[in-house]
View 1: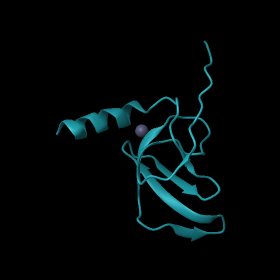
View 2: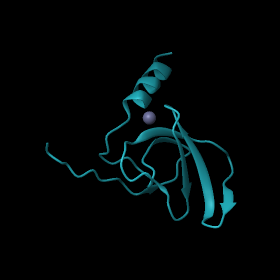
View 3: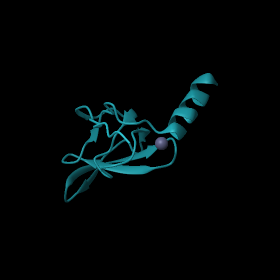
View 4: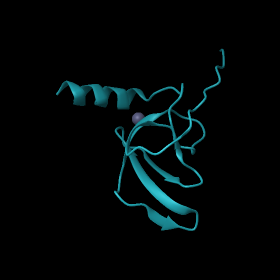
Length: 88
Ligand SMILES: [Zn+2]
């Protein structure tokens, strides 16, 4: 099997869209929406909570931001929900 390096884009701070969290380091890019309007303050700085269309939670902080998806594989479940949503 050929391994193609998957590279994310730069740090990103939209409130929704295709995003790749820093953790887990593997996985796919999901279509995330920011869960709360205001960040929580933690020992790591501000933390932002995200929920993907397929139900995966992610947290980003100032030190571990969300990244643009670059050429990461996109989650099929999120893609399906997104196309269903835009078709409605
Ligand atoms: Zn997903």
